[in-house]
Length: 424
Image 1 (tube, helix red, strand yellow):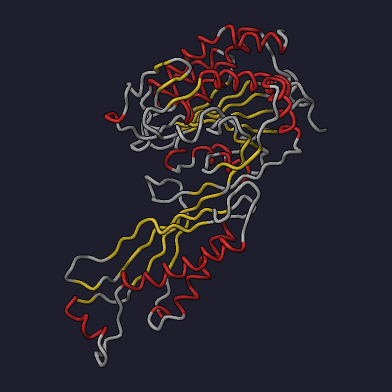
Image 2 (image 1 turned 90 degrees about the vertical axis):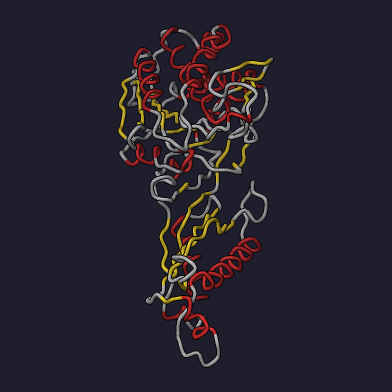
């Protein structure tokens, strides 16, 4: 079996294979939205992994989308550490007129690689697949199990990774290869919610004078106007969070409540009898969804009870969801990093071995599927090539030098981690 040094040398010698894989992945137009377009790329990845000795399973998701999980059994899995690598194949929507190149054709200009998804995050997936191929070519049999998830839905808040983990897929440590600019990142969480106000009666707009004028006598309300009570309550809570809450790695005030979308009313001839507010809530890694949503509900209910009409017609709440596209809701749980976990320490060692530097540990300004690993109590880190500035951008690019360096780090880490004995 080839040594780790031979593996690292092969990463550089066969780099054209990495470019070929990335070029093929970029050619699949897996934009989300519209989504429902990933079966072909998952079939391609499935075929590649099967050639590399993985056992694969494709899981139906939404119509036109599939999840893929794969495993290469270790030669002594009971005694050695297992590893799970995760990445999403959906990419952000493209405005073709804003691109200088074909977004679905990999283009290299000097060190930069251009194409939709090179940074977010087909570059990371290509790196994983390239290493799987090198393990096969070099005859490297790892003692520990090596698992891989190619998921769908991350761009639209759809629960691809959640679905696989909920079905019991696990490992001793996980790396999500999403955009982190080679930093080791955890993340805060995000949840969306709907707050609904509803009147028990519908009135013609000709009744407005009777409901707003002294002596009018009609106990009624306009739900669009009453939503201002809710928004003001949310603003007060958001300000309070900004003053009282903090977390290392985040600037003050990252806990936010964004009133993102409002709908209400039938048409101008009616007093709006219903209004719905869609909010996006960001919270810190040491907070959980249940506590955050309860705090918001308590704040809004208290404000409603202080209103003479709303106290008898309290707002209702609907939190989260499995898809922004299908049910207008999403959840991204938070992820706290444990720098003392053996997996993190091994990854740090591999990083330093390859780069000669210490990695930067921090918190992502965005969210990825890495939070689902924390939710299911699987030690994990978000660590991938590409920058947040390039993710979703026109003319998205990735440094090939960085991609190669990332691949060398992951080669050393996979080799060492799956050759290290697990806790008995």
